[in-house]
Length: 110
Image (cartoon, rainbow, N blue to C red; front, top):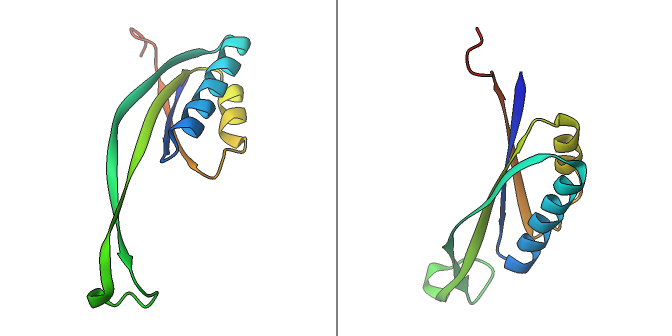
């Protein structure tokens, strides 16, 4: 059985996100791990309402703050110990990481 670890990294700080992705790719190259990606998605704009006071009074709203969120997707084939090491490491607070593990079977096997 082969395991495929899919990583989704999101951040509003593009430089921090690209730095984390580059670090993962460099470590994968040094370990000889098979990586697919990074696959970049178009940035998505998120909106947050701005209020004049902290009580959230709707009549005191004075605009909206818009910020982009960037996404990168990576896949790591096999090398479960390396995937655990990557997922367990500390990432900057500005980078959100999600991991999904799939178990695959080689073609032609029952």
